[in-house]
Length: 314
Image 1: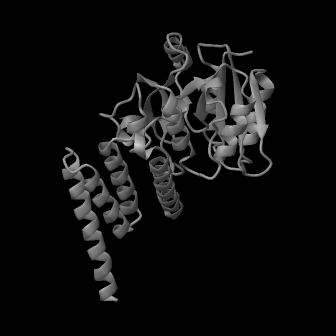
Image 2: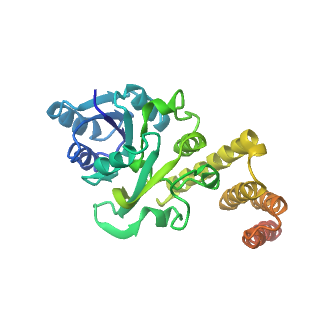
Image 3: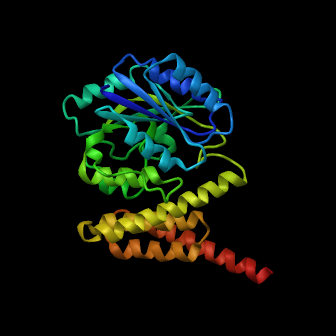
């Protein structure tokens, strides 16, 4: 059995998937299998995958006959994995050649760590943008190693295509198939309840920026993806509050309330945003973050006034 099962999630990335596959099979660590789960792509992805699978016996393929969503893709891949460790990659991203070797060196000291890394941003043509993943995730100064549960409650900033973890540590944990865009966030929160993270500071994978990214694309479809993603974040945080509220300090609860308020602000639901910002202030009135919460509260108040003003104008 291979030590590592690389899980590649595929859907309509025919333009990029060959580079993603190449980046896995050309790793300088060879004791691996590559499981590709394609979610009924309608472009050339299937033909590209089949060509690589015919050439490399380490590649195993699961083709969905209809689109079942990213959660089902990941869950099928996890269930099929034979390796001790599972390493995830999206079909539009790229691993650097020494990615697995450097992360496995970390796992030699503690195989129960959830290991990930910084990433390099590339454009749709594979050119470096000169930026790091932590910049778009707004996590440059955030805690990246150790116990991350309370920090992650404020938002997900883990680069999913760099993750590697021990399969048996999942037990029955899988992606929640209700969620379309934040299934990885809920999955990581549950992992973070029981295991510590370790972040390799150097970029071990490349994150591709293009029009189909959930949070950075443009156009009406991208806007709808973002709105759905914000609503999913709200639900995940509310569920976490219900489940873990008694175990959380007031300062952490305040950050969660403020994060929910931010989501509602992005959705232009300003009254709800105001309500959660007020809860954040009440939860931790002496926190150093209270000034920021007050600023966001004022922002939501202005939003309410703008909505009222538009209604009056009509």
